[in-house]
Length: 103
Image (cartoon, rainbow, N blue to C red; front, side):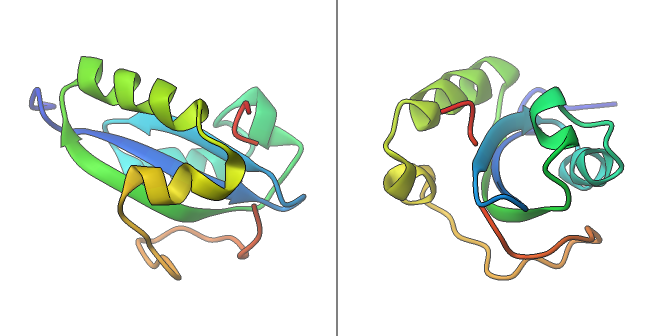
């Protein structure tokens, strides 16, 4: 069962160089879904995706609020605004390093 503060805000880099920002309560499962083409309509045609940054420990409401704030940032500030970097990421997700964020 998901605890109230198990929500994560994440940024993935897409194959075409764009960024996508989202929220999830299971980061590994969500990233694997993205890379199977089942994650989000935006990333489906931009595979593979690679985790660029994430921040966890939020309620769903807090995560959605932070996601909105990240999406308001200029591209070059998105990961910095999120505050935690992951280079490279190895949490069981397959993909290459590249960067839409529903910018």
